Image 1 (cartoon, rainbow, N blue to C red):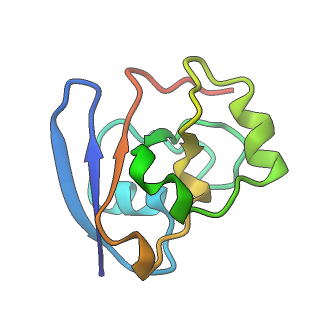
Image 2: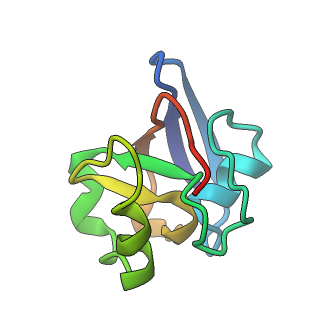
Length: 108
């Protein structure tokens, strides 16, 4: 299991164990982390699982796909470390990952 810390906009954090192979979004949903809406269930079509990856971890992630990058263009408050949690696959290399959630999630 890989430990991931989800930090809410109000700085409340929740650390959970997520199985390798799942997505960061699935880890949030399965562990009742508030703030990850995941309206499309992980199909990369709604952007309601937007997170800010702690900059320390950005170089450990695969580059976003064209679909993810395209969706992020429409997300309010996007930053250089913005990612869609449904597109981040959990691996042992991500043990200790920290992601911050935006104040709100808006469906496309």
